[in-house]
Structure formats: structure tokens, C-alpha cells
Image (cartoon, rainbow, N blue to C red; front, side, top):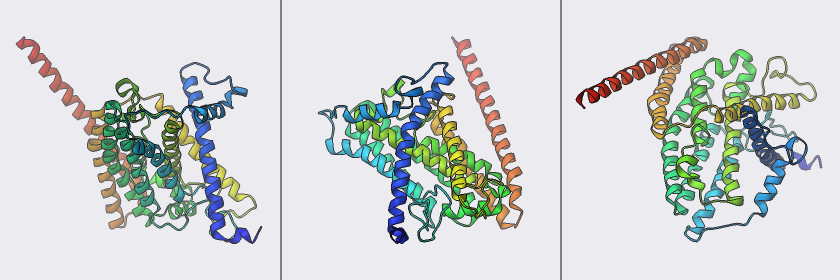
Length: 389
């Protein structure tokens, strides 16, 4: 058995089994967690009938979806209709292949904690694969032959095209500071530098932009313009039910997990934590502590995303587009210029923290003045209309 574990292909297959099993289980119970959180925020009980404290509710829901009748409407394009959910799950699962979910090891016989190690362009790979997920929504909306679904898929395409730009630009500063686009290397550099070396101290604006843009790409509230019930009944998955609908939902929750891992790895030191899990810790069981630290950080971001869903109302579509093109893209461009200037002139990277705060404050001031001028212009216009009548 020990000789078998020395084979890299066997360890990679074991990493795939562990990662996929953990993701599928996590998605089921994250749904329960979100339902409990929403019930707590709305002063109600939430699921509590199936199992103690409702802990078996995900199993009951899974069985229900599996045995539910597979309804395929007559008016749909059958091949594309079935291809859409498959692409959603495949792309979101594939993106996780280059995400470290623990202290990465390249030694034979040790668990690698990553499916595809030594990918120098890991960030580019994730962006390339996750951007393909939009095809699942477009194909699902188009193949459904339904106006609500088609409008939802059109909104999704515009949303992804817009938010891909600030999402990619937010990572440029991190890549320049760490001189790499490998997630393994970025995580290890922060761990070796210690708590003061976490990228959040150098790129707070980039972290905020990345978080907002990634949420918009995952179609989570307040950015779920592609499936809002008030306008589009269900959007791109109006005609889907049963297991096919669940595959779209699974893709969305897998994307949420990937976002949380990326936020933890890119900006918050990954598995590193002062004293608890230092980079050079070599005591027995150190890997378990590091995995626990990383999962705690990831869980924190997942809970934050779920709380935002029940806190912030949905944007209008023009507000959604305006946030990307008028706010996030200029901010991301200015942030990249700041990083380039600091590196070009050899300044201490810690200067980026006050500069980023100043950039954010300046953007807020400009936005406030623009809003006030717009309000005054609208008031004068309405006053002139009233006087005219």
C-alpha cells in the first residue's frame, strides 16, 4: 500500500476524491446553514423537522431531487437544454483543481492538498475556466425557448463581460507584488513573510474589488439579476426542475466555495496564522492545524456571503452595470498604477496601505459629489416641469 502511495497519479486521484467529496458534502450543508442563517435574521425557526436540529434535511432534499420526475418540456432544444447544467458543474469543479486546500506537499507519499500542482498560471487557469461557466447559463436560457429564460441569459452575459474586467485587474497588483501567478507560491510567500506579509495589508482595495466582482460572477444576491423572481420568474432556469435544476445550484455553491478559498489564499495568508500555524512548523500533525486554519477563514467568507444575501437588496440592472464600469474598473486601474509606481521607484510596499485608503476615500468623495450634483439637477428639472405645467 505504501508503494502505491508513492505514485504521483495515485495521490492525484486521491486528492480528486477527497476534494470532490468534501465539496459535494459542503454544498449540501451550506444550503442548510444558509436557511438557518436566514431564519435567524428573519426571526423564525428554519428547517428543524428532519433529524436533530434539522441536520438530515440536506439528505432528504437530495433524495427528493434524485427521485423527482425528470421533466423535459416539448418546446426546448433537448441537447442544449441538458448540456447547460452539465457545463455549470464541470467548469466550477474544474476551477478548483489548482486551488490549494491545505499545506501543499510535493514529496512522494505525502498527501498533496492540491489536485494539479506546479501550475505557474493558476490564477489565469481559474479565470479562464470560470468564465466558461457563462455558457451554461446562456445555453440553458436559449435552449429553454422561453422569454424569461432568454432575458436572464442575456443579463448574465452582460454581467460576466462587465465584471470579468475588474476581477482580472484586481489580481494584477497581487501578481506584481509576489512576482508570480501561482496560488501555491502566493500562499507560501505570505506564510514565510508572516502576518505582516499578508496581501490584505498591501492590496485592501484589490481585495474589495475582487470580492464584489467574484460575487457578481457567481450570480449571488445582490447580483442575481439573471434569476430574480420578481421580474423573470426564475430567469435562465425557469424551465428546469429536479436534478437538472440542482446542478445549476451545485455550480453556484461550488463557485462560492472557490471564491472563499481564493479570498483566503490571495489576501489573508491561506493556512498561515500567527503562532498557531507558522510556515516552518514541523511538529507532528501540523498539517491538520494548517488545514483547520484555512477552513476557518474559508467558512468566515462563506458566512459573510450568505449574510449579504439577506442584508442588501437586489441592484437594478443599470446600477449593476454602472458599478462595474463607473466604479470598479476605474478603481482597479488606479490600484494597478499605484502598485506599478511603488515597485518602479523602489518604495516600501507598506506605502500601498495608506495610498489604497486614500484612493478609496477619494473615490467615495467623488461619488458623493457626483450623486449630489445629480440630485440637484433632477430637483431643478422637476421644479421646471412643475412650473411649466
